[in-house]
Image (cartoon, rainbow, N blue to C red; front, side, top):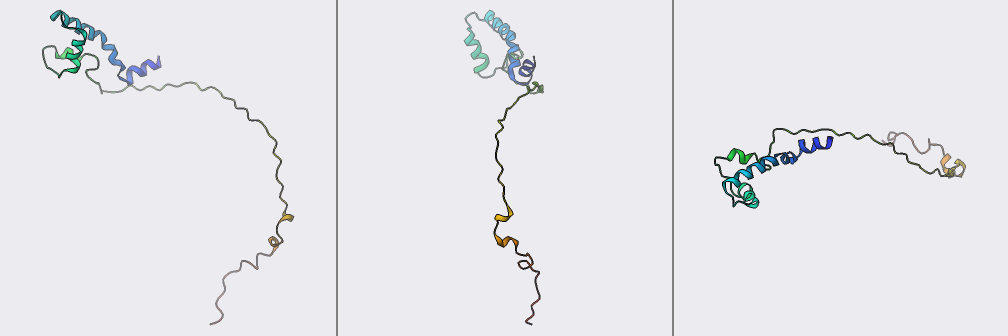
Amino acid sequence: MAFSVYLFGATDAYQLLKIPLFIKHFVTHQKEDATLSLVGFIKIHYLDPLVIDEDFDQDMQLPFKTHETDGCMISAISIPLQKIALEVPHTFVSPIVYSMLEESPYFFLPMVKIFQPPRANTLA
């Protein structure tokens, strides 16, 4: 149901609902000219240049002759989500242990000797 609402409201598929008008108009032309074929009818109404005559209003009601841009019906289709279960295998990873004793002996130097504040120039 929701798909058909979208199809006929937001696309040009609503033009297919005008097919009975197409058939009725073709029958009317057939009564006027018995030699007119369906291909000839389509050529006159869709391929030839537009002619404004006494049945112009009926011609413009044929499917795919006009495009209505008055509005567009948009519907939101919500599909219930299904629960998805993912199974992740549990693998045991042995942790890597770091010891401070394995570090370089220079790590334990006092930071005071390395980082000192700037001093004034005493040579002046």
